[in-house]
Amino acid sequence: MVKIKFLFLALLPYAAAMSQSQPLPNDSQKVITRSTMVGIGATNILDTYLSEEHFKGGGISFLATIERQRQNSRWGTLMEHEANISSCDSRNTQQELEAAYNFYWGKLYRWDLLDGQLSLQAGGLLNTSLGVIYNTSNGNNPAQARAHLNLMPTGVATYRFQLFNKQMVARYELSLPLAGVMFSPNYGQSYYEIFNRGNYDHNIVPTTFVSAPEWRQLLTLDAAITRRITLRIGYLGNIQQSHVNGLRQHIWTHRFMIGLTKRFSITPHAL
Image (cartoon, rainbow, N blue to C red; front, side, top):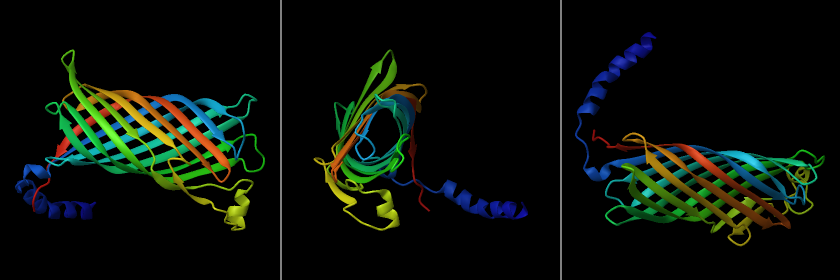
């Protein structure tokens, strides 16, 4: 405790100097928008490595979004964390459990129209995805690992308007795959062969929008609660598919989302 107090006192002059420093020009100011949402909805799963059956059910998703835009700059940064858990059944009472985590990061270029009321953004996101599908009825090979890396062209449209004297913001985001790589066992190959015996059989597969099509869209509506905090509701649809190594897989999720959004500015200080 004494050491902590001493360190705190030693840093006081430095903190005072920082607080009195002059701000940089306005073009260094960053506007940051943070959104945290949870949602529930339908899930549809097919993985022919585990079963030829289609599995339908529901699940929950978590989505955290961070947007950074530097003042007087057309380029912005978009970062999203998406986690999903689902439980689905087939027509013959089999069950599959699915869990996945997706991370998206990229740069978008912005155009402002209608006196700033409408903003259009275009660019690309790098998507890393990790997950697993578990079939509760399978004795051999009950689980299928999911891992892929994608480059996804992305577009965003944002429209600001007034409704009942409240500031509203409608936003639509669409991402499509261009190219990437994914992990997949080959047809008839077991995980024991891959990891215990080291038998590689084209398990790292290059993909394109033809072999692994994907359609991810996010539609949201923000309603201001306070000056900086808004209520956000929306729809998140993530349609992921692949057909590689003689195996077909798809994970279709549809979620009704709700959460909060906070917007604030940061002005760096010169030393």
